[in-house]
Image (cartoon, rainbow, N blue to C red):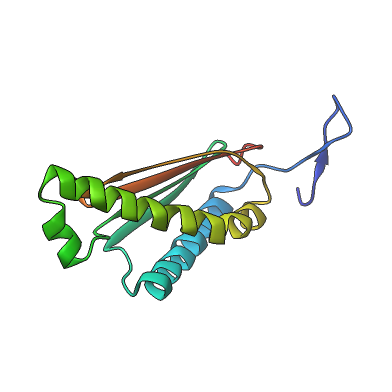
Length: 135
């Protein structure tokens, strides 16, 4: 069924759930978009990233995003704190730059956003909760 559905309980439009093919296609498109974004902005993409759309969430995880100097700095507790602070700035800028794109791509509004960075493991993740279910 194409298009919007109308809820029998109120007059708000209810978006249809994604088919498996639509979900996989959106995951792939967002993944490619983010790879290009980070490569353009930072000069280096992540070695591995995964985008998952599940229920009302988008989960983005990345590994291998630190530069060689950052890996060296992250070997000490104070260095990890420094890298976490600088990469937190990067994540906040990424979110500022890409929130609208993601909302438009998924045809949904963000209601919660949380991220974490583990410099000691060269890992980061971003979990976003939306105002509708996709699956």
